[in-house]
Image (cartoon, rainbow, N blue to C red; front, side):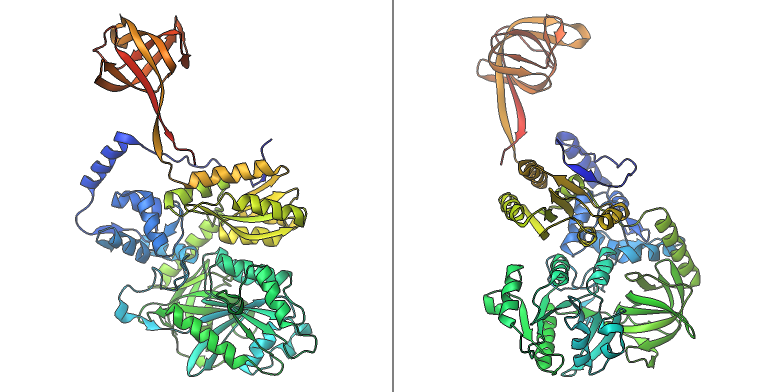
Length: 635
């Protein structure tokens, strides 16, 4: 019985077309001969599939270059001109931007395709494609830090201690009610902090392609330990490949047990340096203001290792952190500038809205004229409210800004946003892109089943392909599981469990592939088949059998039919054959027809006579037909 699957209805998906053998070689040679020699005009934005056709290269070549630079995209996604130009450059092409209407379209694609510096999957922290390629223009920028953790573990109080302010005291119940951005200076070096309510905003931004965080601080209360939201935050940080620092807070309390926290972290696969891992842990007390300097030193150390840089001398690009309507100021949005410099008077396109920057306020609430890379500012002047995670981009004029907003609106209403792949599509995409990892969120009915299934699944890992379990747990599949899978392009596997009502709504909205099983071997079989799809199969020759030609029948236009006797093995219709005369190989061809008397058959076994149609003229009695097939080597 196949696994039950929850997925919204969709239209038919385009089928992948693959050529092979001589046809592929001829096509490749023809494409190479047709490649342009001068500058290639590229629209802005350009769909990856169209870029491959323009450059006369394969989709896989484009995707491989993107992946090497930390950008993961499918053939139907768009990239901006800067990204496309650098991809083309790596492949040996000169490019120029096509003018006219394409310029307005550029901004619409940006809000889904922008990736921050340091968001590459290998976690190397180097600038990705939208930063300027001229190293001379890159300057060191401040790190952007997200503070996450379980409710009431002291996230905001820790920021208070860092900023020496009293934000928490003015909030309802001491719980953070909004997303904020602030800046601090430690040892003459600037650090930007994002304070999020848990991990939801972090996930929403990452799901939209806006990974703004360079470092994540996970706050864990020493008297409470690792709690459910702590685990979820760890899952999201690990999936985003962002460096993690653990702040063990409330160590001043009498019932604090920091050693227990460290052990619970290890149980959740977070090994701190003290336990031989690579995660930094710092003991702090937000209330007593102790350990704060040590934490800041560790943030700057991790930032130095990432070598974070940006180019201030270009039009600004940033990410919206929050937006609101202010009674006296109108539409106000907090933006984190990631590259370039944002100035008063700049015309900007932001998702489905746009405007001209009329005022800039920094994190301290003071009016400023410019905002450089890694600076959080409030902007006033937008015609509407953007969403958290929308990309802000400076454009040439208001016409371009309006065009961008209109195209983003059309794309949103037409459902052309981010789509989540099925298990089969993820397998095929990873295979095409030579990235051998299958991401999974695993939920089971009880903890005992979880251990058995995890063990069975991990046994499927090989040197070439692996399963990355982003989250595992017992209980129903919930909305948080679906959000993590959506942001990470993962599949959700459930064993003897089901989605809860919130998860069902999220599945309908995101299209995440959810598979439910009640038999372990069926679960492992499906994942094993997906992993095999990730491998480039090694093709080997398999001899099926031999037949001796007893009679040659002339069939006119249909060619010659070899009346034959199968001496061993079997003869298979459509298989490749070699025709031997003694020890001499006459030809290598394919069986065009196979008959037993007047009936077409699929195969003929040893000891039976048959008529074998061959695309060969020179056949005589006594020739030997060797039937073989090329098959994938079993792993």
